[in-house]
Amino acid sequence: MPRNVRHILPRVASQRREKLTAVIPAFEEAGNIASVVRELQSLSKRNSKIDFVVVDDGSSDGTRELAIAAGARVISHPYNMGIGVTVQTGFRHALAHGAQYVVQVDGDGQHIPDEIEKLLPPLIAGTADVVVGTRFAKGQGEGLQTTTFMRWLAGRALSLTIHFLTGSRISDTTSGFRVFNREAAEYIANNYPDDYPEVQILVNLARRGFRIVEVPVRMRSRTAGASSINWWRAIYYVFKVMFSSFMDKVRR
Amino acid sequence: MLALTLKRAWLTHLAAALGVYYPPTALFLVLSFFMIVMLVHFSMVVSKLLTQNQKLAQKVALLEAEISFKDGADPSHDSNAA
Image (tube, rainbow over all chains, first blue to last red; front, side, top):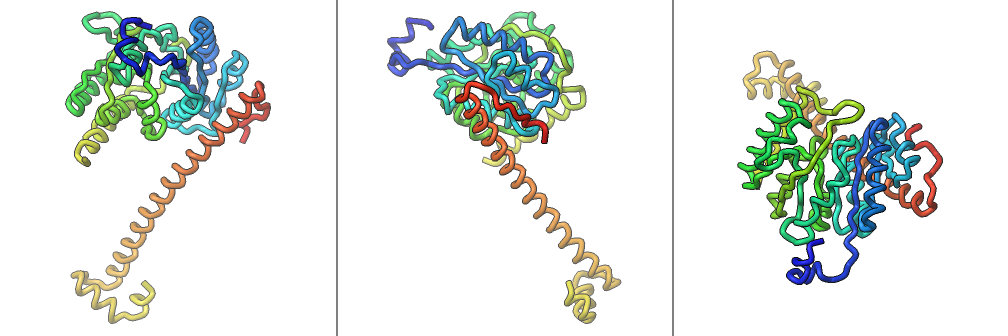
């Protein structure tokens, strides 16, 4: 924690235990979940302010059992309800247990838990409400190998859409690796779009005045299983987000 | 609907008002209109129920988790069996 910002912000200076809860949404991630859990365990052993919870979205491949066996706390949906509700469940749990910050770490192992601490400083300093871990480091070519060309193209389109709608510059709009402060997390716990929510939620948050910043992080390719996004869905995704965002803009 | 079926004069009148040449077609039109209204209504009801059901399931999941965390063990029943 940067000591120099402590005296500037009395809110932070109070010796409140700033708990961070990592929410791991997982659906059919039997191949990845155990290693994600292990990584988070070693992280929370090093940093006692960090804990985590796995939210199993009604997987049938034993994701839940594997996560429990690995020693994680698991919340399991009785049936599959989609990523939106899954994240929301995790956030509600985290907030109910007094988390000051909530981070989403995907259950597919793409997000590297050790990078969480890189995302925290803007929140602790109070200069942002949401920090997005981005694959596309500013001014650096690296990071692109973790994504395909189609995703990159879709990402550019979404990034421009968001810039047009909200004025925020976010290069990696589909990154699910995000830390929220309590206020932003509360907003999400109550309003989270259903399908393909990553981009939509950024638009919604930005429009409600939450400050979003990006921090470059390392990410991995999937280690097992297939991505839920394919070519056609990517195109649908781009148009859906553009459409609903424009509708949102028109409506108010 | 029934009235239009029984009172052919009304139906003829309605058909004329709508500019429909063959009166039974007007009846069909009225029928289709009500069907569409009902479909939209059902669609609204279904999506409302879906949302409520998801909220409920979410709550169940959260409560179940609370219990299992308190016990320090996982609930041994298989929630995916149903």
